[in-house]
Structures are given as structure tokens and as C-alpha cells.
Image (cartoon, rainbow, N blue to C red; front, side, top):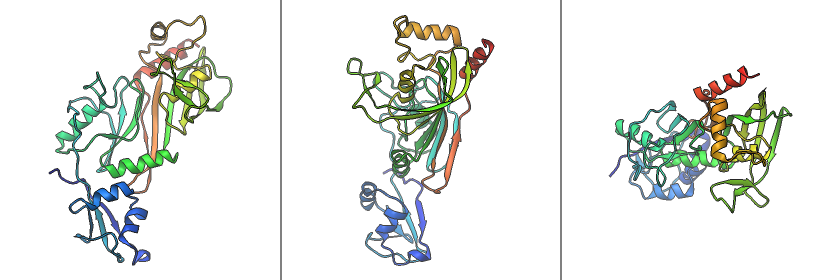
Length: 319
């Protein structure tokens, strides 16, 4: 049997004298019903002062409530030594600066060289057997901040914050054309393109999607923008910026579809020749949320990668 994750600990304060243990677990330690059901079946999953109890018992001031979850291995993920840029790590979270070109999770045809392969290897070297649980995803070509939960509780908590729009996600993008206004919001629904399911489009009846943006700098024929998401739809920034008429530099899927525009691969080649880019110009620069363990707000910043810095230098030189 696998070991346990580091326990979640709660010391009952005086004002909660006589509360039911179930109330502490759900309202103070914020365990979901699903997770609570699993813990009740786990040996030493829930203890008070080191002893197992029914969750219907009352607790007393000073009691030490501990929750332990069994570690689960990342099934079918091959451990692989890969370079990782770790921004932060504690017993519950791992936050990384993902390199452009790296897929987050193995998929059909991409079983190795993913972030998951590298993280599982990294944990294996520490003697840990955590299941790989990314809290959110980034496109293969998008670089920047990404958080991985080390246990089901943390994944549940931060996922719920995302659903409640309490997670701060900030991006930097370089787009085609000069955006005239200084800031704005795109509030347009997104769904799959019926003709090409791997592409997303703005369409009535799609899933709600909201993107806020602010111009950081204007160049000759391009703009640097900072963006914030209220929702997290697939390709959301790429689709919304194209909808505005300002698709990302280097984007192979969402290049301008004007009559004179060249096909996607040729357009991407043109971007490479002009701006030195081999991928779309999007970077997840900031990620912030409330830490499930400490209840403190935490933020992580990922510096702009070299390829986007070089692209900016070329844009500056062309002014």
C-alpha cells in the first residue's frame, strides 16, 4: 500500500467548542463531500488527537484534527528526466514556468517529453509517488506559469477557486496590427468549429468567455498586450484576439483569414522570418490564488522567455 500525503491539520479554537467534526471538516477544512466519503473509508484518514472518530462526534477547543490522504502513483506516465523551471514548491503545491513547445500531459501520439513525464521523474527522485494533477492547462506553444497539486484536496480547492473566478491569471501577448484603444474587454462565447473540431470560434450559443486586455506598447504593425481571463476556454485568448482582428504573432491556427492572407503554415513561416518566432507569442506571466493550506494569497511570476524578448527587440528595431 502506498504511503500518505503530508496531513492537513486544524486546531479547534475556543469559539468552535462543541462543533460537530463534520462541520469542521466541511466548513473549516473545506473538504468536499466526495473527498470526505473517501476519507471515511481510509485507515487513519480522519483523526482527532491521533484517534479515529465518527464525523458525528463533537470536538473541543484545542483538539487537533488531522486528515490524511493515501498517495496515488501517476498511472501510465513514464518518468523522464527533463529540465524543469520550478518557481515554487511546498508539501502541497508545485508551480513551474513551462517552456514553450512542451505539452502538459501525455496524449495519443505524445507519450514522452511532456511536463508530466518530467514532474513524475522529479518526484520519483525524491521518493514520492504523487499523481500528476495539473490545476489548469497551457497550450503546447504557450510558455509560463502552471500549478500542479500534490493531493486531491489542493486540486479540489484551487479548481473551485477557478470556477468562482477567484484565480488571477495574467498573460502577455504580441499581436498583429496596432490596437487603437488602450484597454477593453471581449465578452464573446466560444465553441468548436463544426467544420474543424480542433479549432475554436466565436459563435452564438457557445460557452461564455470573457477576456480583458490592456495595451502595453505599440509597434509598427504589432502590439504588446497584457490580458486577464475570467474564464478558461480552450484557445480563449487566441480566438478572442483574432475576433478583434489582431491574432497572435506566430499563431498557426488563428492567422488572419483575409482574402489575401496565406495559409496557416506559410503564414507561420512568414512570422518566423519577420519576427524570429517559431510559436505563437503568448506567455502566462502571472498566476495567483489562495493557498489551500495557509489560506494566504500567493502569486507567481514567470519572466518573459528569450524568444519573446528577441521578438520585442526586433519590433523595436523596426520602429
